[in-house]
Amino acid sequence: MLDKITIPEQTILQNPPVAFHFMVVFFAGGVLPNPLDIRFQRVSGLSAEINTETYEEGGQNLYSHRLPGRASYSNLVLERGMAVGSILAAEFNAAMSGFQFYPSNVMVMLLDEDSMPINSWLFLKAYPVRWSVSDLDANSNQIVIETMELAYTHFFNIRI
Image (cartoon, rainbow, N blue to C red; front, side):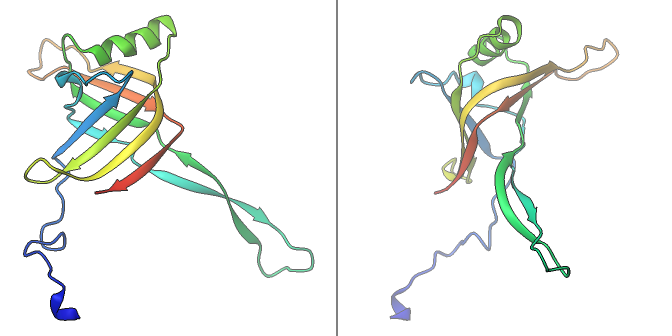
């Protein structure tokens, strides 16, 4: 039975995924994403934590019980060179200046060398909570970086 199992020559153990090949997709209103709004320089905040509650049992003085509580999530932070004509930037502007929120689902995809997804994270009901632009400096020769931060209800890790 073991002789029928084949393992690909290049397994994930031989070639671990690289952190620089990824894509971000916003699923807003069933509209195809703007090509400007899928390319980001950096994505951070891919973390979840289960909070614990301490329960002290009567008569037990050696230890306390630590029970799982609610899950908490970091904000999703996206950074990119400032994109002129971005629909996403217009949505962030509507949220920050007009207090108009249109939550959408966001998928971050880790890609292989053939640009095929190998792992994804789906963030549900994401909405803007922070937006910033890097300093403008006449003495610098750097690209203007736009940072977008999103809160969301929860996320799923999708192994492909």
